[in-house]
Image (cartoon, rainbow, N blue to C red; front, side):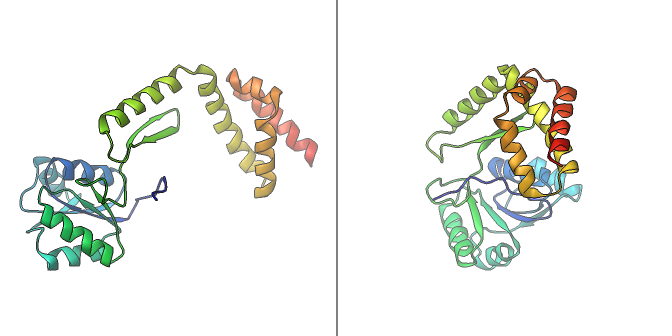
Length: 218
């Protein structure tokens, strides 16, 4: 069973097997997240070559069917991305990754993959990731667009997001005890006065209200 997670990839090692269009998109995605990226392939896209010339990715020209080449690079990786059009190479990569207990994203096989790379978007600090786990990428993309559209049009929720971001930051400064902070968050979530201020986007008034509550507790 797959578990939805957001993971930090800054400084992590990502091996992409396949230098075509899909491999390029995956490589760039993890490169932008701060990962160290290697790409194995017989040929590489112009984008990958450009990134390599800039010293941002390492390109390894070789046959993805070569088990020695695969194993030595998979050992280095925290995550393996499989993106070739060669079923034998893909199967070899999956087998070695499993043997070495490395997570892998197989962009060619939704049933075999361990890691899913979803469609994602962001609005006002709210990150959304959507997948149908291979059933239909078209549906997943349209679902994401619909969710983002709904959020964008929800003025009260967007106001609440801005207020909560400011309030939570101030609470962290003022209340050092983690359990006390969590209790205060839950209390505010059910506080109609606070919610009214939040829905209207009244950040200063909401901060004053929260600080007053904190002072009354001390």
